[in-house]
Length: 461
Image (cartoon, rainbow, N blue to C red; front, side, top):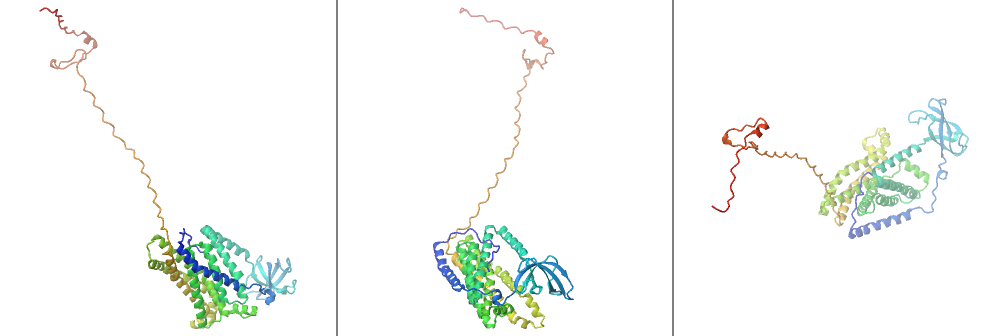
């Protein structure tokens, strides 16, 4: 089933050229039309599926709360008193014996349980049996935590992933399950249902673009390969698909159903979610390589994308194998207790069908890497891709002007000291000059004789 994973593939998408859009349209439109037409032909319009007592299931669920416990009904028995909260007798309390010992559920006061009502005598305790716990609120809390984590990390893309997950369940519950119960071919139903889920999930989660369309093509090719290999090796291994759950289903339906096709349908739907991850990741890797270097050829893009895919392949295959092994773990433990050899255990019907399911799905995942990489490189080299704009580095801050202390200007030389008496003058030939001790002495100094006055010539000799 499609899922919303944590990869950020919704990067800025360049507009595809007209040639690329035309090419993808011719490849995808027929597949989309075939999926829609197949869904219309396979859906059981007007068929009312028998349920409950109509198929021999006379038991109906009733919710109740444990109000009392008493060990007075035997060595390996405990009497449980419950108060019903709905059903034919809400509010009534009844006491029901329950098995006590290894493997039996252990109840305590206040536990919310589910009773199975046979539909005969509402007041009699013999008409009820404790079959399960109520776990609706715990699952609701877990679902809210999951949704909160996806929205916190993915934001708007996380919201799209949650919407795609919801639509996947809608396709599973409203198309795949009714069609299978109506007796339609399980493999055909699984292929059409996987196509519906794939188109809805990929385009809703990653947007309508050339990149997403390429991932859709890769997923379709890989699903077709898984279907062909699954059908071939199920026939070669003589697998019937009749385990305990399938045998009970056939008995309840009362009609012939292709149990081997049901096995293949489970293989396709189980591998679809991981295929989504592989194909989108490979397509995004090729696109980013193309954006980083627009001169790369198809061969160079394919080689570089394949190197990235090899690292992704090992973890994806291990994920699928561990998922199937975890689901079959109780069966593995039960068969190992029979004292059979490893070869007998692996070739038993219930184990062999899980091996075929795992290996066929893994081959499809491994093949999805080169197939999707080749398609992505073929489309990318024909698309006008704008190279990644390298952001300009932030300008370095200008250094703060340093305050340079200027040297103090040299003091101007003082004029030479004037030596001598400003009033009398100084003649160096007269010896060292001595400042008069008092100003009065300076005034008392004898005045130099005035030069003789020149006579004005009268013009006569």
